[in-house]
Length: 469
Image (tube, rainbow, N blue to C red; front, side, top):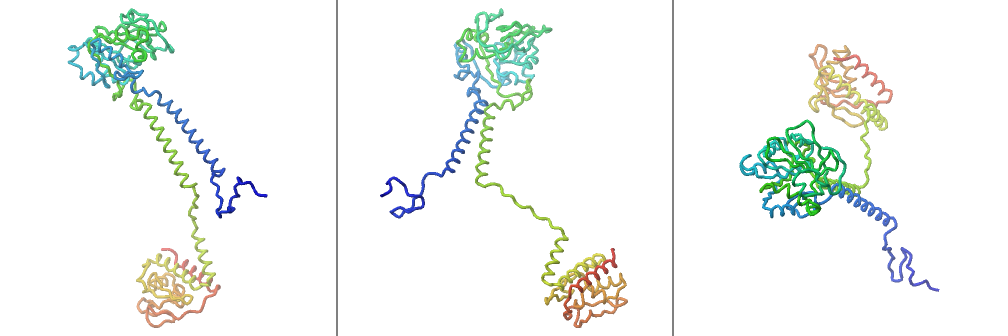
């Protein structure tokens, strides 16, 4: 009985041809990991799309009320109609520049209309110049001015709250342009009311959703030949709404009074805008969307590089060892090696350095001039203060014999250096040494633990007897 032909051999078993079967499908763990990664990226894409739509808004934001834009929120249709009516339309992006480029000073060329978008970005002096032009007979149309602009112009108008108004509104005023246009869809975002107690200018309020609120105001300063036109909304000027109701008639009636029209979209704020908004408010949604993209890119880059580098590995901090522990450890090493001679020399060397500091002896003599010491069968060169000077100073301070001090500091097998005798004149050699200052004495008998302990106590007594400086 044979196995079915469509059954694959088990992994690791050789086939009749001698090959080994290798699975080609990904392992379940790898497949699950791939699904999780794709799900995370999909979620990030959805979140990014929602945030981009919320921040970015419409792509027509930069072309709003632009006379060269055919988009729904542009005003190309209105500009073309005005051109057919004999009005020269010039577009600009700075009111101060437009005023400087206007023909002649105030009074010589008053036949002009200014349409200003974002009037809150203007400074007080620029608004004062506009008032001078209005006094000379020019018309200034302000799109959605706020209270700061109205106060700077000293108009008898204030902003009021009338709620959202959608749909056409009747004129409701005796203004000739509004009466001729009839119902219009202004879609205002700002409403205006009368400011009582100010008679310096007269104002006509039109398209009023309530008795105390209006979407369009025409204000004439006292003694002035021109006028200010305040628009609470600009939807009726756009390509999308120009052909609805009486929007076209109202727009043309307000803008065809003079043969020249300066259409200025104030894109940059002045150094001291009346609305108090700085350059941060002018960055626009595109800037913040770009920042969001960079932030997401940096986060993804950090995750990618972090995974390539692996998880953080803890690193042990350096161990701080007390000096006493180091000394005890070295002592145990000496004890394990039975190096009592080296231990004795370490005790003597430490005391010699301390005594030299206290006695004012030079801490380091000429290398090799001190002598040598034999410890454990090894001859070691001694470095440190001059033996003769140090021993003489200690002997004088303590009153001990120089030979006793010499034996304690250098041992009986220490260097044969000259020492000063009593009175400091006659030198004499070291103990049991002949042959000059650099000769090496015969090797002393080996120390035991008891002798090493007695040496440590004797050195301690000598140090206490010498005392401080």
